[in-house]
Image 1: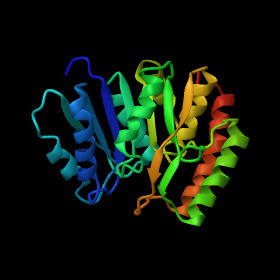
Image 2: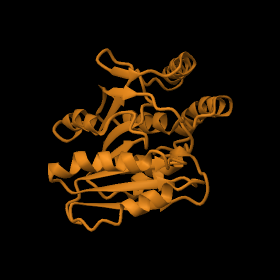
Image 3: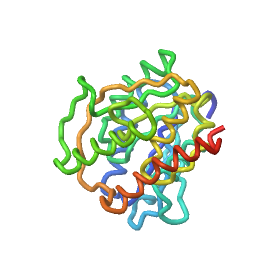
Length: 246
């Protein structure tokens, strides 16, 4: 496929209930636009039919789009899956989105306005700006935990953003590919590391309010994941001090 415009990178773990409908919804939206695109589904050691469903979906012979399934050798973590998918992406631009489409694919137009039509290297969805639209909220506990983590992010890294963790981000790959080569975080704090490196390199970043709805079935385990995410913030600063990010 020549002149590939967009890669849609989807990390997936035990998503057999959602992956098929999400791929179909993305296809219905993107295909009429007439710009070649690809799906890059990274299966993170799923124990259900996630990989089979994605593989079957990608059997269509269509010059406008394709699907590549990248199976990990076991459950390696979301950050690992994102890094692998982004380094395999062949599009001029790459959209990172969660398998549950918590931010509908139609919201990509807001990100493209900043990256494709504007001068941004990265545009990322936010649930916590004034114009963000939360249609289905998380539990009070989840929302409060997220706000606490965001405060830790600001204190430890200096990132000024309201929401670094929304899984809906668009990258200009000519400038951003090296970020993923340098990425070290394989868990849930990978977003912070990528944005931290990008900002330190002087990239143009834009936080964009998006529509978002909570989907049941989160893979986050609060006690171990919260501890690891906090620890990873310290690792990010230490990596920077050591010159790991170049």
